[in-house]
Amino acid sequence: MKPEVYRVAERHGLPVTLVAGTWMRIPNVPNLSLEVVGLGFDAADDWIAARAGKDDVVITADIPLAARCLERGACVIGTTGHPFTESNIGDAMATRTLLSELRGAGLEAGGPAPFDPRDRSRFLQALEAAIQAIRRAR
Image (cartoon, rainbow, N blue to C red; front, top):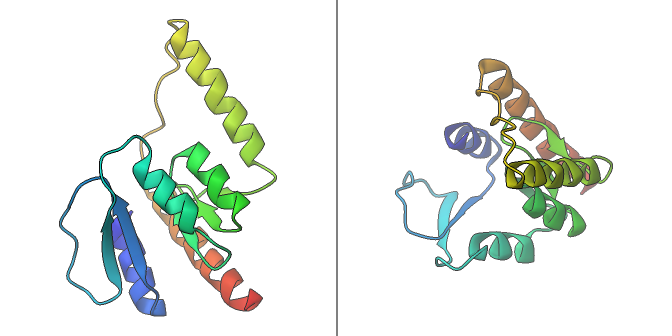
């Protein structure tokens, strides 16, 4: 989803920060930056959660990170375009825990569904809606 995020951010004149444990190549554009935080366990998540705030959009498939960012007032969107909200994060955490326990018991639950064009469309709509909601709230 990175190319889509870059295009939407450029259109709106918004900064984008990618957070990673190691260096990676990113496009050389003014509104895009990379924060390398090291390889420690959850170092990237900790960096993001510590800095997320009410005027930020966090994009992640990591449910515990989504919960932490929601607590700080950030808007959080999953990579398939499903927003994480105060009303659905509890269910998402419970489902994650249940699936983890099933895997621990040796039951195969399968992985996520393949990414498809509807996911891309839903993601772009959710990102645009989040940006507009933040702008209205200012």
